Length: 118
Image 1: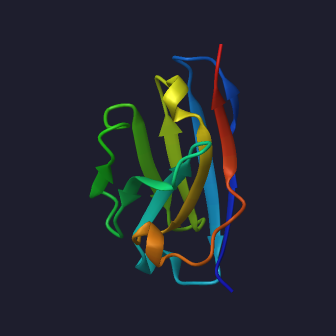
Image 2 (image 1 turned 90 degrees about the vertical axis):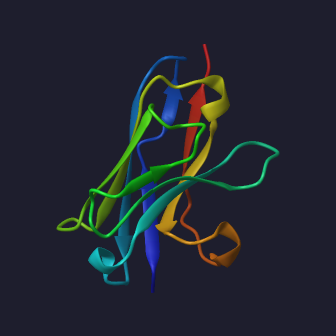
């Protein structure tokens, strides 16, 4: 079945960086656009970034544009999220999935928690 295993989260100070990874399995990875999403405490899950099948096409939420970079390695069935200049408001559990509206997704991985705090 479709599975996502996210990793790379942790505690980081404001202004710091983290690189998240997501290993996908159970579907033809190279045939799908992939996205990162996040859910902050007490808030709804939101879309963060998408990388298309052709990796030159990437889109970002305004809140992370210029600070986060999404990428993918089709040979490894893995999608990455490089997060720089982290802010307190980036604190959330981060998830990856096929690129869809949040409400259309019925299966998620365990996510990887990111805490930005001094």
